[in-house]
Image (cartoon, rainbow, N blue to C red):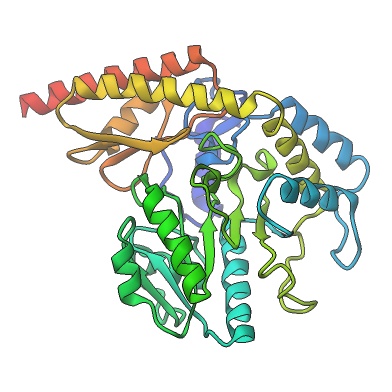
Amino acid sequence: MNSKQIIRMNHKYVIDTYGKQRSLALVKGKGSRVWDADGNSYLDFLSGLAVNGLGHCHPKVVQALKKQAETLIHVSNLYYNEPQVLLAERLVRNSFASKCFFCNSGAEANEGAIKLARKWGHTVGNGIGIVTLKRSFHGRTIATITATGQEKFQRNFHPLVEGFKYAALNDLASIEAVLEDTDCAIMFELVQAEGGIHVATGDFVKGIRKLCDERNLLLILDEVQTGMGRTGRLFAYQHYGIKPDIITLAKSLAGGVPMGAMLAGPKVADIFQPGDHASTFGGNPLASAAALATVSVMTADGFLKNVRALSKYLFADIRKIAQRHGFVREVRGLGMLIGIEFDGPVKNAVSDCLKRGLIVGTAGENVMRLLPPLTATKKEIDEALAVIEAVLEKFENESAKT
């Protein structure tokens, strides 16, 4: 089918929950590039919203999927499966965690973290309250949109789940102001991606860890977007010199295959018992094999060091470009998660990038979001930067005329 045919069928048969970009129907991907149904090529610096951390169709992930698909695709979690336990061991060995729970998405991982925290709260007598942050995003289920500190995601879905309240990023006093004796956890993202690419400071993160220790609260970090190498470390918490009690993962975990995970530290690793929580497809052999291949690539010698070097290179050049355009307020982010804030809407600039063969995204109305594959080359980064600079120059010229 061509693009028009695919789009026509989509409008007829698929519930429209996403605002599609420029009628783009993608049919193929390899490395940092994708192709549409009409044969047009695009440099993908959105990476499937951070899912394709290793780029599209990474050969080791593809090989693992082919081998596993020929062996065992699914088995109930009533039984043991080898790829799942190998993956769990690898994640535990490379993190603070003692045990893992597997599911299918970031929202589901966060649901699991919320349930685990609440059961722990009941067990120790703390209560069930959870403090999250304004501008956060934790998913689309009823509990996770309640945890999300943005009213626009909650509109039309009331009544929400009780027990959540919101404080401000990098403002420890605002957290202390809302904490109550009936709380069990503080939950937040180290980089608020959907909220505009706002990065937690070291003092803030260490202050929350100290506060949790003093008040016997759990520290839950939503690493759905920042986990799996996106920030230049396997997990973003490793930049801060602290250990959380729970982290949640998804996005890049299985190289493009749907998978989520909740990693639990020793304080809570044995709180869930059979019957407390479950996920039919969670940790199935196919997804686990893909994730195991992904983790193997990301933990290989030199991989994350190269991500950090690419990030430094990309940030430096973007900031040089930004300095030449007065309407760019700020460039911020961590690793290969980057936001360029304009003094007005970025929608037209993002569309212009797409017309020139570069896929980027948004993080709110005024922020252009870049999520390059962690495997991108300097040549591909230079190509993307050339497009961004041309678009910003056009944007500035058009603004000057008006």
